[in-house]
Amino acid sequence: MRYCYIFLVLISVFHDNLTAQCFSSLNPVGGISNLLVLEKNTLRLIVSYNYGISNEYFEGHKKSDYSLIKRADYNYAGTIIAYGVFNKITLEAETGYFLNKTYKLESSTNTGYGFNNFIVSPKFSLITNYDKRFFMSGSTGIKIPFSRELQKVDGVEVPHELQPSTHAMGYVVQAFIVKENSFKGIRYFLVARGEYNYKNKAGYKYGNFLSVSAYLSKHLMYNWIKGDWTTILQLRNEFRGKDNINDRIVESTGGYSLLIMPQINYTIKERWNISLMGNIPVYQYFNGIQLAAKFGLILNFAGDFSL
Image (cartoon, rainbow, N blue to C red; front, side, top):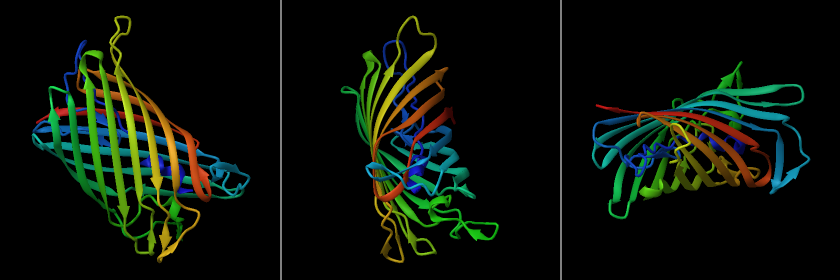
């Protein structure tokens, strides 16, 4: 069930800031965070709205006839705030709020809602090569739950797959690589993110998570196109380990997903970005029988402020 919510870890906008012939910014946004460090005293705010839906089960990589849950969906609002503390160090914070995580059975509906974990991460510039237009950054962070207590609705504990967060500590490690071809208006990105979760108070430990994404970003530098538009195509691999409760493995958890994510981004005055993205599963493999993701949509807004 929980894998229709893998998309929570939201994909954000790309901040390309391109001129007619070359890039004017070295601080694109991609994946779930800024790809590179920000300039000193620069504040970046990213807000996103995410919607996902599922209505079919998979067993392994094939559709299953199992049909306990008729429909599942979620609505999620995410926020990322980043600040350039030094020229090579940026401090980032991210969180979000589930308006709902819902599944509908034949005669009843279960819903969870509330804040996701709060994540704070320092990011470091690792490689900066202006001649070859090659850049690399990395970050490590901690996941902090807003509450250690599992959510209850009308006095009934919400199922683990509908809880708004892990309700436990954890940590996150990320790596970002950017390669640019300025004169063609092209960027290549490689982004990796790993998450480790500890047990919550109920003894439940969500499976560890790894995602690896490859991006191709093309600035549309054509006279017949009005405005500053960029198209992005992302190929994303997601791996999730099995959950366990009180050190016993939960068998129908964990799996692998391959997604294609097309995106269109519009830049306003080289500072504001509006982006629309789709999540399209190409291949999904699940341990046991699980509810699979069908599709998702993400609307993002990003802005930079000089302090």
